[in-house]
Image 1 (tube, protein in one colour):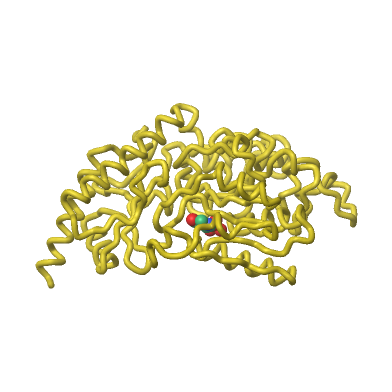
Image 2: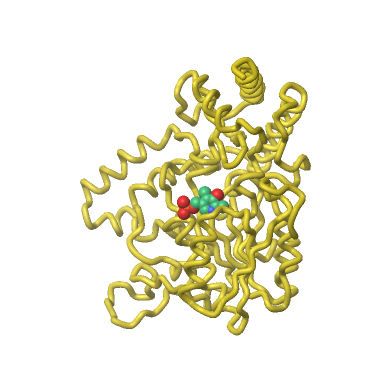
Length: 389
Ligand SMILES: *Cc1c(COP(=O)(O)O)cnc(C)c1O
């Protein structure tokens, strides 16, 4: 599958969880959508299926999420979709006033959550210091123990963007439901990286990115999942004409479209959709389980080799493969300098405050030799650092 990607020669790319590599089919797909636009102009909305693209792409993505085709829509950014999904979730449990999330989650999620709750007024945001907060490992209470009968909504990030800790989606969703709460899962570092069974786990809502492990390109639109049982009643506050039942009636009164379409707001990014559609083609040719199993094997090899050859790096990612996503975080006081030194060797990893080197395992375009090469590069930059000190 590596041939399905365009990577610069000589570069070892270990940052596919921030921005996935360029799929080979994308350039042609962008030319093709340009031709649709040039040839069909406004007619493209019907003739080329642009109008339905948020839903048809959602249906294409659905199997990767363990969802049905009519439960997923592709639109907006993950941040905006969190706003819509949490607002819709809160509306399902009127009278409850507590939203639970992890302090260590992606900060942007918290900014959106705070903005929404401030706008609504009267809500309490209960932030827990999860057990895998890399700033204070071992400290804090788990998300589970903060959920009680007052909880309205739990916003849970499935794979932590720092540590790669992976929550038990089924158990956490069940627990929340036992307390009468609604769960919104953030799958930014999960989609395309680990197996997902949203329907089977009875998840309520989920959102996530397509520019990370799904290789949709910089700024690629996000997805939003709503369980079928919520589709008829779910209301979201960014109601817009693309989510209207009869958009071309241009009625002053909003009537939500039946189904997942009601989560749309305004005109979707058709050009960006073309890149994402081409990027998703690779999943038609692989066994998903095989890809995810290879991802776990790549991260296991990385952890083993780091333990063996780079003992000054502390593995900050769960060692249990069932509890980690598809990257490995390595803690070192000079993490920032290490990542910069790797970059000078054309090894692209990333740094996360305060002291983490993050290495993404992307089995579609990485091999096991890449992991060996990555650890050899890590050893060399650690030696250089030692020599310089
Ligand atoms: C990457 C990431 C985001 C980013 O969302 P956008 O709004 O699409 O930029 C949100 N949440 C998590 C957990 C992430 O890792």
